[in-house]
Each structure stands twice: as C-alpha cells, then as structure tokens.
Length: 412
Image 1 (cartoon, helix red, strand yellow):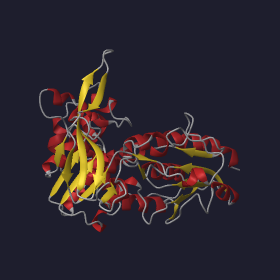
Image 2 (cartoon, rainbow, N blue to C red):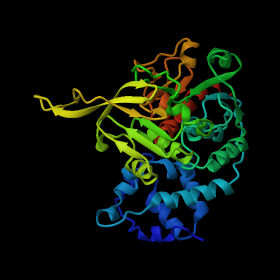
Image 3 (cartoon, rainbow, N blue to C red):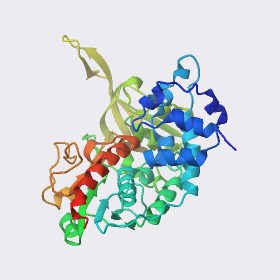
C-alpha cells in the first residue's frame, strides 16, 4: 500500500524541476515520484540510497522549506508536494528490506574516526569500493549528532540501527567507546596498517556566553543536555538561550520530559533565527514561548538577568544591535540551557602533530578534503562548523572520491 500516493499524484513532473535543482544532493525527485506511482518502490529506494545513503534520515531532518518543498512549483498558489514524506516511506522500506553483499576486498585498511553523518557515508562508500574499513566511535552507539544531538521523538533510532546493520554486512568493523587522540593517536593508526584516516568528529564543545554565573549549578549547555535529557531534573521553568536548531531541540525536549514553562530568549527577531521555520513552528505548537530582543547579562541563583536590545541603522546603511540602557530585568527560572553554537573538541589536534586548524578551531582542509597531514582527510561539521546533515553527506561523497584516488597507490 502506497501511503503517500495522494502527495505523489499532486506532482506535475516539471521538466525543469526546481525541487531537484534546490536539493543539495540533487535527488532525482521527478523520477522517484514516477517510480513510486508505478509501485516500483525497490527501484526507487536503490536510486535514493546510492545517491544518499542517509536518505531515510534526511527525509526527516532536512530543512525542506528551503529545499524541495520550499521550491515546489505547486507551492506558489497552493500546497507544495511533500516529497520528503514520499522519500521517507521509500527509503525506510528499502533500508529495512535490503541486504548488502560484501564487496571483493582490496586489502587496504581505512580508519574512520567518528560515526556521524559524514563518517557513516564515508564508511559505507569506501566499504562498497572494497576497502577494509574500521569505525572508531567514542560513544557507545554510532550516529553522532543523529543519536546524541537530535531527540528520539523527532528522529527515531530505527534507521540508525538499520544503517549499522548494513555497515556490518559490508564488513565494516565498529569500535565503540574508542576515543582517538590521547592514547590511540593518528600515528598509531598508521603504524597498525591503516593507509588513510578520515576524521568526522563533529562539533561537540559548547560555545560559552562568557558572562558571570555561567558555571552555577542550574546552568547547562544544550548540546550536553541533548545527549541524555532524561537524566536531567530541570524543574518546572526553563529558559533556553539561543535560536538555532539545537535550541529548538533542547526546548522541545525540556517540554517532553516534563517542564511546564519553557521559554526561548534571543537577542534578535524571528527573521534572524538560524533554526528552520518548521522547527520554530514545532516548538511553538508544543507550547514553547519566545522572547525576542533580549541579551543575557548575568546569571544568578534565582535565574538570569537580560537587557533589551534593538536594531539601529548606521550612517553607512548597515545595521547594529545595541542594548537599551536601563532595561535590565531579572527573569526567574529553575534551569538555564545555553545553545549558542558549538566548536570542535580538540582531542585529536592537541595529541597529533601535523593537523592545522583555522582560527575558530575547525580542521583545515583543501578542496578535496585533505588535511595538512598526509593521508588524513576530513569533512562535515569538524571542518565547516555546525551545518545540516545533508551538507555533511554531500561533502563526504566528495571526500570518498579523494580518498579513493589517494588509496589506489596501495592496492596491489
């Protein structure tokens, strides 16, 4: 039974498909919809998986309002086609039904450090090309941000578990609780026979507010909170600082796990928020409140002091955000979650010579994903900062080609 046939029938099969043109990974959307309408689910699933192995996940977490759905011609005068619903149905069924056969091995070992979207993509892609791949994951489960950064009520773990199963079918070895850097270094990996190393460790260090009171007992960083929200006792009233997708996930999780009053405070307006409109609306629908033009000044035992802000026009035509004098006010709360972006952890950089970083701590790479140390490649959030899952997959596919070209010299 086709669950989304009505959606598929809405598609007018544009010759110049804006939905596909605005998909970061160029998903052949009209082709997939036609196959779906013909009941060729397996064929459609194969195309989606080979183009994007995380298709089933991207169908849930992609910012569709800026990509396929937001550019559907039907949306100009009515409701756009919800292709992501069709994609999720096809890709989830395909991921569950397929069995991947181990490719003929070429005898070349590759290490993949981190098992987030980029790491999973690289591991799958290189394993399919015959490389002997081992994933090193510092946590007890694979998935990276998919497992430890996105709430399970928004992204069920089912498809991540299925991806792990498919990886193992291809012969990929997964070492959990394995932190690369302090003890097992990159040099040690090379000594043990790995010919190339991919780093996809993401960005897990929270960025500080750098205001007084940030270390008090009722203050938590949202990226840490999202790792195990069920373990926290935030109390009834929670204030979240920031307006990106992490802030939305943290606020929704706080509501989900029992806090009645959850408020997001942001120094600018709604149009300036980095979270997708969909995520903002979801938070609002679940009862999260928003206060805009509020900048944090100091955290105290009773809560947090904010001051009002406003946008002013400069003489040169640019805009500046300024504080309004005398507007400071204490907002009482039980807990505070800080969600103002993340930066990379530096375990690998500190303990391994030859890896250069940019001023913001992100790994430096060239256009091919090569770091400043020979044989070491990287992409995803650890090189670009916190971006979307689909951007990590797109970059990872390019890096796979670069690594394959580099590794061919070792194939006998």
